[in-house]
Image (cartoon, rainbow, N blue to C red):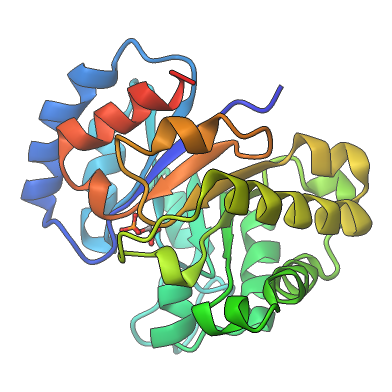
Length: 253
Ligand code: PGA
């Protein structure tokens, strides 16, 4: 009932030329894949090119962040209307690298989520605990807090498109993937928290992706867990063959 979503977060990698070279190798490798949705989140400078090059394919593209306002004196920002104007359909919100390096707060993630829903952009809201919080036994508290803040003021009726990504900060780019059981447990905590805010039907239909050192050889065991509905892949999504392998292996479980 929850169609898996396998997404590539390209972070600050790939020029437009490199993005298009990736697609010309990648699209043929996944063209017959229907078992999951496929999304790519390139840099802002490549986004328009990737959107154009994936039109009519089974791959969609989105932005790695956005502002919540439509326009204004905010140097360096991109608005929801600007994303709409280039046929962008998805947006990542609250990635831990945005929270750490761009000082995005839970309140900002909430404003952005509301804006995404107003503009019918499909949001992927990222949450996850640091190593310090996990070692202090605070994983559940952190996840519940981040979800509660992100969903503050959002109505169950408008939650249909929302995707959550559980990305433990200690697993991002480190090679230390969460065990399938650790990830499944965190996803269950997130789903229960979503249910308290938006109701059970919304929570049970919501896709929760795992992110953090996903690779071709660990994706199947992660995806075999009942609460894991897809993956948000950083480093291993930068090579067409490796990302295609992740997509194919994700349905092998
Ligand atoms: P990683 O990144 O796969 O390189 O750990 C995941 C992410 O940051 O979304």
